[in-house]
Length: 145
Image (cartoon, rainbow, N blue to C red; front, side, top):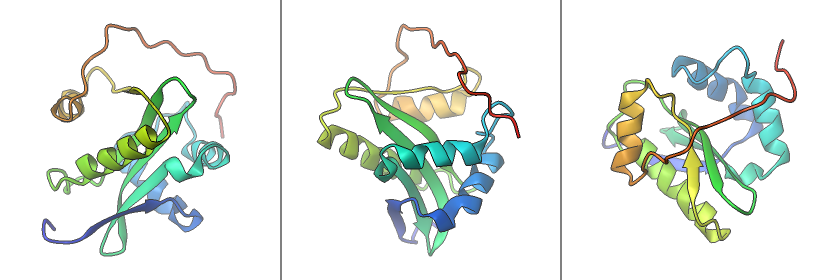
């Protein structure tokens, strides 16, 4: 697959099933986050920051970004297992960073589960550092099906 063309484009509604399948395959979905609701919510706010990557017309990667005027965020960066090491995640992150920088975003934040050493190493290779901060969260709307 290394020689095949990787194309990055905005999410389309016809991508929904493939996106959710990729997120489930890569372990990004959790019972407390309904991926379908996450897609619906994203499409209401900066839908142009929801990107997918394709190889030969097949969806193989995603990234969902946002910027509220202070910090940029990246969520749901995923690359199809078996395709890691081809530069697809790096290319997708570069596009996200460009889009955020073009909006005046001074810093990008993201969260990785502390047990995921491989993904932490991936981001560190892209220049990301572990911030001396604790991530806190509070669910305002439960995502139960």
